[in-house]
Image: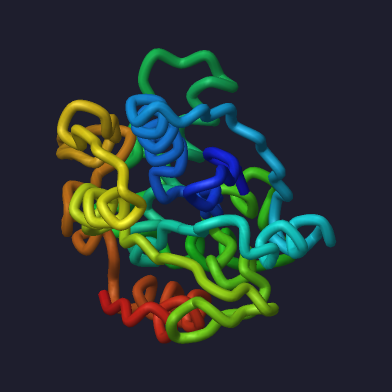
Length: 236
């Protein structure tokens, strides 16, 4: 988690609880820039625990202090899984020092569908490597440790605002308004949420992730992320 800015005499501080593969860096940079444009000192104080948010007791006390507004970004698990594969492709490209390494060549069969055995292996807790566990394959509820429908009662956290990746710009605009911050979201929110060609590192353009799945691989994601899907009301 990151403290975007601290409490002052006339406002609460702001904490961002970052989930992997949810445009976290872009969101953090946007809020920091927005805070500074509103004459709020923002120096990222990163109290970050890989994996379980409640790994460190100090995180709980800070979150429950009442001194901060708290927000987080969530994402459709089927789309999020495609994003982790894209990230793993990039890691492999860098490791092998390749100029190009395409998503399709690594993860899709001859029909352009995710190979079920690959999906099954990545979701197997005994086979998840450090990078895939930290950057996407782990369900969001694991990072919160426990979850509720409104995401406001897990382990005693009093309130957290959930922003949906699918409506990122709109939700962030509403949230900054709630915080009393003026912003220019079109200029200041720099993300990679856009269309890529099919032969690319990430073959998802809005709903295009659906094209990657078979009924079998779709069901594997459903079973693995069922608590996230039910809690946040996602569907394929």
